[in-house]
Length: 137
Image (cartoon, rainbow, N blue to C red; front, side):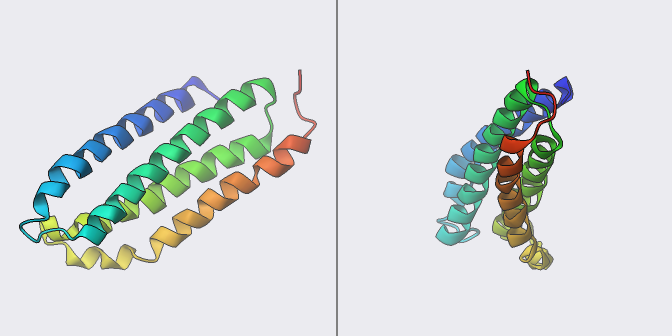
C-alpha cells in the first residue's frame, strides 16, 4: 500500500473529528428550531462514529500490510473506504437534508445498509488474510 493511503487515512480521521464537532455544536443548536430531530442528530453521530472506527481499521490494515502484504488486506482497506463513503456519507446527507431543503435525498436511504455490508466485508477479509502466504517476513 502506498503512502497516499496514509494521507487518505489522515484526511478521513480529520473529517470525522470536524464532523463530530459540527454535530455536537452546530447541529445540536438546530434542535430548538426544529430543523433537525434528536433521531437525525443521533444518526449523524452514528455516521461520525463509524467513520472514525473504520478509519482506524484502515490504519491497522495499512500497518499490517507493511509486515504481510496480501490481496485480502487490500480488499479490506478498500471495503472499509467504500463503507465509509456509502454508510457514513449517506447518513450525513440523510440526517441534514432539512437544513438545506433537500428532501429528495431520502432516496439515499437504501445506500446506508449497502455501506454497512461493505464494512462487514472489510472485516471478513481479515480471515483469509491471516492464512495468506503472500510476502511474509
